[in-house]
Length: 376
Ligand SMILES: *[C@@H]1O[C@H](CO)[C@@H](O)[C@H](O)[C@H]1NC(C)=O
Ligand SMILES: *[C@@H]1O[C@H](CO)[C@@H](O)[C@H](O)[C@H]1NC(C)=O
Image (cartoon, rainbow, N blue to C red; front, top):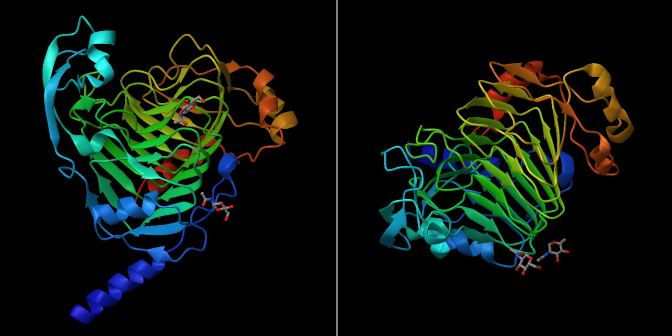
């Protein structure tokens, strides 16, 4: 018995030592740790060390790394900007946020896990891969360090980061980086953003086949739907979002602004209680071949940036001069409208790696079968 169990475990490790597939879209060509021999951290400290050192690495997770309690807890006074009902998130008074921005909100006692607040530092030339459905990081996210490039995160779940407290931590942070691929990742029960690109340039990023699970006991909309989904800020960012499942959110899914070009293709948005897109100044969004199901407000008004999301094939043919092919129409079920055809920004796609697009008809089945950790 024992022999077979060990053999099976070794086989599982052997099967998971390399990245599966390749990035499509803007981060095409990313290699992460490349051919570096796989390492298998056994403690949270070892994992932190592998991600933050200066060697190219292939880091394989074969179990859950639970950071909760590893850095102590803090009890303090925060605030309740969204109300004091038990389903509402509370806010930590980080950098005096409550006093500066929510002065009229009632104060509230908060008690949060310190490990969640700041993600694990990730340096250049790393692949972080989960083995089968075993790779889970609990209670702490990751932060691709300023200046880093060439990072792959694949088949990992990030969960349970202070879900009750805004400012209690993000799952994945990218700010001032280049060539990052986030693939087959699941994020669930997060304090703040599931994925956040900061105000500096994150250059080329591909976010594919992820499961953004917004189900939470605590939310800023107090209704079990997480508000802080995906925030794509930047200064010259190119982001491909393909094949993602964005489920049960109520805002910022995504919020796009700050000279960010977003190609959103063949994603599936399902069940939202607020809005999906926020397109602020400097947000340039091409959305094609996506499915919106039960998304009453697909894009919050006003759209201050630019959007190409066309419902008719004649207009979609305008993509040909910039993408070398027509764009695909999006599909809608019990959802609001998403229909605007700004073309001025499509020239920004020239010379870039551009993801392919399928007709939306197969998106629901392929995304629900493939998106998230444990689906490779
Ligand atoms: C990452 O790898 C590339 C290619 O091998 C190399 O040129 C670069 O110096 C590495 N970066 C760091 C920070 O090690
Ligand atoms: C962003 O850019 C500013 C201005 O160059 C710099 O001061 C800051 O440290 C940068 N932040 C990051 C995360 O790189």
